[in-house]
Amino acid sequence: MSSVALSVLTLTLGMFFILIGQFKVTPKYFPDIHEDMRREFGRINKVFPLYQITNWRPYAKNYRMTIGILEIVCGAVLVLIPGRLKQIANTILLMLMLGAVYTHYTLHDKFDRMAPGIIFSLLLSTRLIIYWQGKYAHLNILNQKQPYESKKKIQIEEDENTQESIDEETDEKKKD
Image 1 (cartoon, one colour):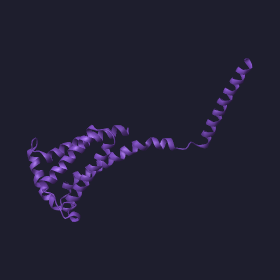
Image 2 (cartoon, rainbow, N blue to C red):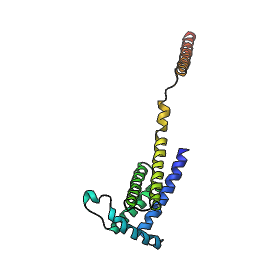
Image 3 (cartoon, helix red, strand yellow):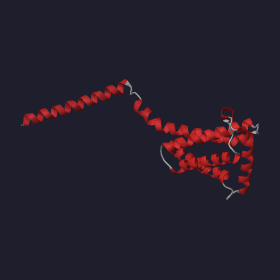
Image 4 (cartoon, rainbow, N blue to C red):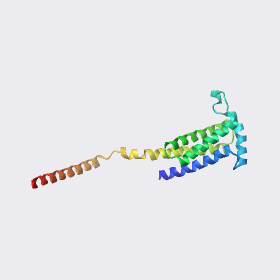
C-alpha cells in the first residue's frame, strides 16, 4: 500500500513543481501568472534569507529564474528518475518550500500567501516519511524476535528432520 501512495504522491508533486517552476521561468503559456511572479519576486528579493549572513542579494530576475529552474529540475527528477536522486530532489524542494514560508512570514503576508508553502512542505515531508517507512519496513520484519516456544518448536522439528536423515543413512549402510 505504501508503494502506491508513494508513487501517486511522487508523480503529483513532480508534475506540480514542473508547472509552478514553468510559471516562474517563462511567460509562454501563462503570461498573467508569469507577470505576477515577476512582481512578487521583486518584493521577495528584499528579504533574501541569506542576506544577513552574506550581505548580498541576488537580482530579482536571477532569484526567480534559479528557484523556477530548481523546481522544474527537481519536479522532473521526481517524475522520471528512480533511486536516491528522488530523495535529494524531495529534500531540495522541501527546503525551497520552507524558504517560501519564511519569506512570506517575514514580509507579514496573510496566511493565504503562506498556505501553499505550508501545504507543499507537509506533502513533501509526508512523501519522505512514506519512503522511509517502506524502505525500513523489511528490516523490522527480519529483526523481530520469535517467541521462545516457536523457537523451541522449530528446533524440535529440525532435530526430527536430522534424526530421520541419520536413520535413512544407517538403513542404506545396512543394505550395502
